[in-house]
Length: 272
Image (tube, helix red, strand yellow):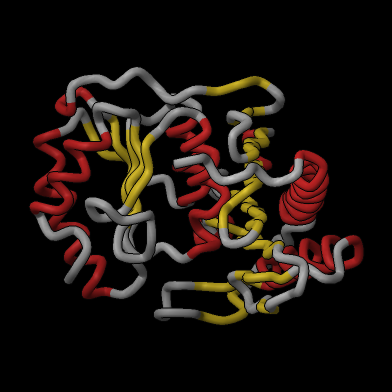
């Protein structure tokens, strides 16, 4: 069996350059343009799952910047950008991952920009403006933080692992997720809840977390961060044998991934 051919290096470089610039511009807009009277513009899955005017502005900036330079590409964005494109490239954009943190003035929020080529994630960028950090990865090329290569942590025993998670905005799902966390806490060093999936996945890549799991993510939440974590040496997946998806996303150092995934399966973390 032979490996599938790698995408053209020139295409990778072009997409990475665009992703970096688009994420940087959106991050600057969000950081410097946040109004003092920032308000909720709409809600999504529930009254506490909010959209602000800045989410919408940032997505328009990203998609407009990229479409001007690659008009044949497709888009999938959290705030409504959706087009098929004809080039084989699709951009997956979360213009503001961690909207509630942003709304409250908390620093853990990010801009996530990924590019798929023929259905495989090729490029991922996660910009975290309030930490002055830019994570990036190209498939097969490793992961970087501000131009410095990063690797996930060597795996500790599970009972010494620091693991992050997130909670859904639908009340019934949140209640079940709290039950799972209650069962996991005695089995781990501790649990963290950062509020931005893209930032959590990037922190796994940087060795700041031993693992991360969450149910209910969308493609724009995980596309860039999952690639970055994987290129940093982490293992990623969903339920056993499955890819990361809305049922379950797990990313962790090898040696933490398998027992964490097994516990999540045992506890039924993927269903209500």
